[in-house]
Image 1 (tube, rainbow, N blue to C red):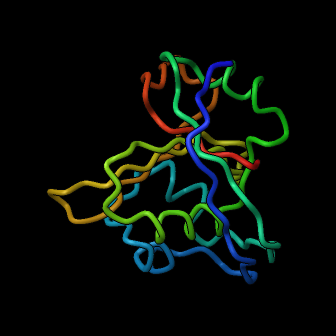
Image 2 (spheres, rainbow, N blue to C red):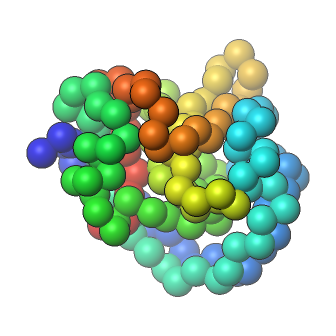
Amino acid sequence: MAFTFLRTVRIAAQPAVTISKQYFKGAGVVWANNIFQAEFYSLEVPTTEEIEIAVHRLKKSLFDAPILAELGDKAKISVSQFRTFLAANRESLEWFIFYLSGRNGKRAVYAYWSVNCGGWRVGARSVTRPDEWRQGYRVVSQV
């Protein structure tokens, strides 16, 4: 196992929505990189059912491929569930990693609360990018 299980979080059912900068601002997002904006802003997201998601701690630094291999189908959560999670975890000192579907397929998405900026900084990147996620980062997935 590449992770240590930390906790579960229940995410209520979410209505269909068209994603926008304002939509994320309501969850405390103050900055998003260009890839995140291109992949998710103005994306139409369908209704989701209530879900329980898991938060795991990386035991060692890893690339996306082994993380995705271990999580399998449970890796993906919806963009609206991601936003709801951020809204419920404002001011967390944890770095989070998510796997979301954007316009061009699966993306690794990170989020961390910036005390200096007073909100979440989020970014998206390719799951084939040759950079490791650091030991201790939190991976969020379906239970």
